[in-house]
Length: 83
Image (cartoon, rainbow, N blue to C red):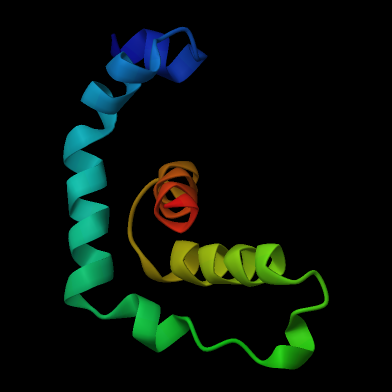
């Protein structure tokens, strides 16, 4: 299952099973360290692309702050933002 995850052959359900523990740790770090509050204030001058631009800026800031796979961090944050 992990090999299929790395090659992109898993179903989304199997990907979630592989990502589960890491996803929990990343989510905990976001909440425990109040990262949305600390990193989520974005200068209006940086928002040329609208709300999508704000999401991208927040994702990049969090990827620099949170220990873990940057691709997984990005996926988790995009999931949160879409809700």
